Length: 538
Image (cartoon, rainbow, N blue to C red; front, side, top):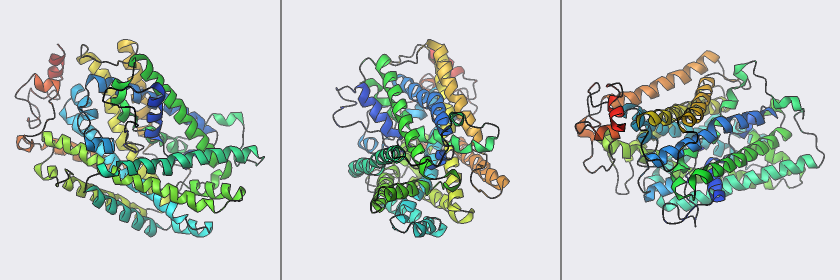
């Protein structure tokens, strides 16, 4: 979230967006922090040495393309100056994927893209909070008791909903005051535990302990004979998601055409190294057959600290991990609604959903988001196990996110054709061919992960495979249908006269075009075969 999973706020001293410049190393660190997470490592530890292949594949064909494509789009169609809420949440209130997709295609797909981004985060909340709930369970020094508690679906449901609704009530008062809290929660609950995990894993092996996996070179190449064994690997894409949030800082990098790609490459290598070493640390300690998606990280810390004769440190790490989750949730809970509100004010949401309180928080959107999170959380009780619900919600979040990413990759290719003369301070290398190669690679990789996400994984019990897939397909159809339905029902009266959302280029060429335009009119590029968009580039 992943961020969306985490806010991409410029580090102190970088003066991003002002007169200062961001160094290559500074940019790399910002990008690593934007995607750093430990929650999903157990899923990849299932693959042992084979996880290295998946991390590299996703980095080359998804992480790097996302970063470079977003940089071109952000500089060609820049967001306006960041406001306080954006600095606190990392969510762009204007521009971003909504602007990019809308410029390339039409308002319908633009709204679908931002709506999928909103839903992705709402669906991801329960999985993030599940990790926090499990961390709380492992504060108990009795590992057996902690394991039983963390598998209790009622305990997970109660903790998830309690923390989420407390965060919502806090979020209703605005999040600017909690930006620093979130930042430090990230250091305490993500960065420090990741460093400890990697160092302890290296020491564990260096001391002569036998790893729980076989260290054979042949295992570096995974078994591709059964697609159902590859499902967990697709979750890597969610690890890397959120890098596009930092694309806005490309304008603050000296010699961006050279240094921005360099910073991205350094970040990609650093991110892969962190994820690989963290994943292998878990695989070294916990046998593949015993890996539990929600518990394995805590079990690894417990076993490593027991080996190091400091078992008292395990509960401390559990508390740190919980702080990392809960501290971030306070900020995340408002971010998606702020982005959706800005788009809604431009005429894409009914007035009811544009209501805000005195702090400028979209109250009714937050209540609907809370209802969705509550509904999704019920899966912890309905499905066979906490692990099954965790996996299904993770996959649904990936599905929503990948729809948005596929639209983004398609946009950079189309805009090279429809608006070739648009000034782009940063452009993908190798001209139009580069856009096709880099954007195409990202699109195809996202499409592959999208298809795999609907398959039940062989590594964990998910109950009926048909039921598992059916729920994911059904939720996806409903979510996409709601987004397209809201757009279809839009009315001119929905537009807030105070909205400063600038029209798309094709709207500027057709003064009578607005978000309330009846679908099928010549002012809508979706109905006019893209003619309006083509004219806009002439």
